[in-house]
Length: 332
Image 1 (cartoon, one colour):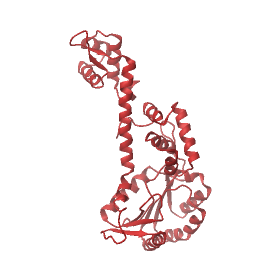
Image 2 (tube, rainbow, N blue to C red; image 1 turned 120 degrees about the vertical axis):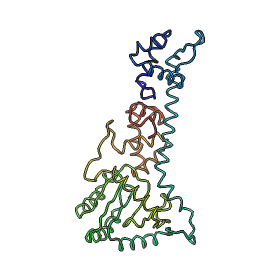
Image 3 (cartoon, rainbow, N blue to C red; image 1 turned 180 degrees about the horizontal axis):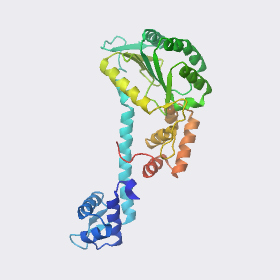
Image 4 (cartoon, rainbow, N blue to C red; image 1 turned 30 degrees about the vertical axis):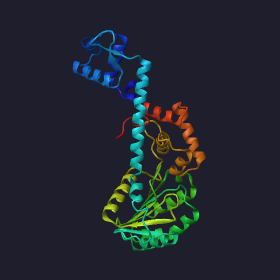
């Protein structure tokens, strides 16, 4: 029962035995627990490190178990600290692409940097994308966050998509899971798939990105206003990292024609992502933006998860999710 709080089976057994039989020594604990002496001694060391056992004030040289109410508070505090560390690691991982982009965020129009060209304004960005798609010969890889795509934008894309696929260009696009609820986007993705394109979805995406022939990438400088400025990247090291990022996301994405699989806890990818974001302390607005849904939908998903976890706060939902195995208990 206490394994979710960081205590292994032998450690829990030793702790319980010490509570039930305060006068037991190592030999008696070995007999009661049924584990080798070295494992019992290792468990005692762990319990001591966790402050679940302490030297007896009455019997010199002996250890005593702290009371369960104090012991559970200690374990919960430790678990909360580990959860906070995990949340930091997740945030750092998800920000990896953003940090890469941020290296170019302060570039000035006159700045000169090998492998980097700054594109100011939506017109220049569109001109660049038009040129790249005209010149591409092998492959286009794209992250398309933002939820449902405007019908006019989808209609405008069809002639170019048909032309690219017609000359054998491989097209792989990753959208958010939320587009599955938009008929127009689903119809467009189905049409694209029938022509040979490949479309998958994920719960969240790090940024908007288009990579052509694994040699050039266009990424907005700001995710808040993708039309204000972008960077055209051609550096080999940068492209290698961005292609690896795309492949990693693509590998975990679900084909649009297939319903997203639920995990062992019965959570959909969207629910699992929401739970992770809740545990990190994100607001409904931030979660909605990450998932490409309305704040009302994000709030509904969050409320449902909290009810299922019987949690009264978002932080408590994160702790209970770890206890129930819905979130990992240690950073990977």
